[in-house]
Image (cartoon, rainbow, N blue to C red):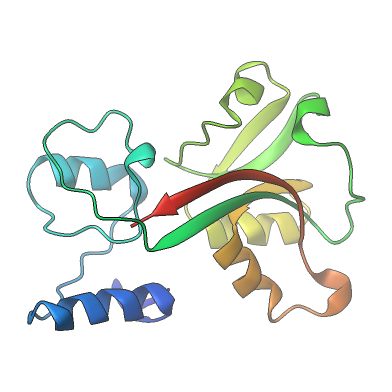
Length: 173
């Protein structure tokens, strides 16, 4: 989703949210906020609808919420830079730094973080995580399929980021 001045302007998620608002006869009012602030906003009844989300992403969420049926699937990948040889799967890593997003949970990788086979290096957004990957700050990053495809669309063939291991395949509403 393309965001300017804290407001979404375009992208598939923006189109879905606009369509949803139109179908219920309302104007959408957007409040773009960091991932770590969303749970608090939900718990303080500051959010009517939270798009592109999954119950599994909020394991500690209290309260009574209605979750819609999934409309998308988020595929999270361990991606490598173009220069990084397709290496071992994450289970064989030892003390490998991996780009991640601040506030994001990666349940499928948590045991590897706990055992220090993988070490998180957090960025504020997935775009920043992939920018650091392309700049050589680390050899691997966790990203979702949509962001990976969007990033790769403008890269020359020899610079495209490579998905090397599927981390999670989750429904999102």
